[in-house]
Length: 113
Image (cartoon, rainbow, N blue to C red; front, side, top):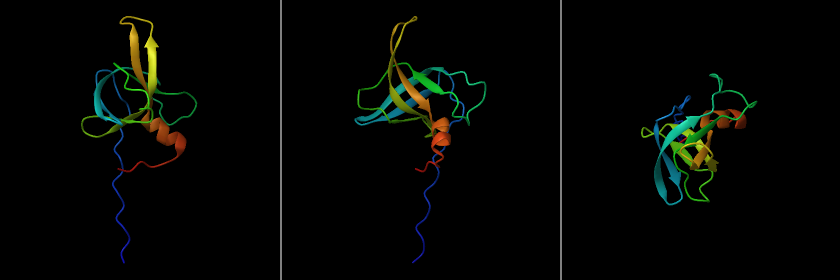
C-alpha cells in the first residue's frame, strides 16, 4: 500500500501589517476583524527573546483563545490570545494574538492544513 499523501503546509504571513482584514476561526464560525497594531520587532521574527503580538480592532468571545487568525487568502497570521483594554483613543477592548510565525518557530513545528 502506498504511503498517505502529505498534506500541504499552511501558508504563513511573515509580516502582518496595520489595516489588513483577517478572519478569526472561532468556535461559532469565522469572525471578521482588522489589524490595528503590531509589535515593532525591527524585522526579526525567528526569536523567542521578545513576544510579537498582533492587535485587532475588536475581541472575540471568551473561550476562543487558540483560534487561528487568517487572511482572506488563507495565510496564517496569528493565534488569538484574548482581549486587552486600550487606554488611548479610541478607548475600549481590542483583540490580542500571538504572531503565528514566531509561535511555530518557538514550538519548532511545521504547520499543515
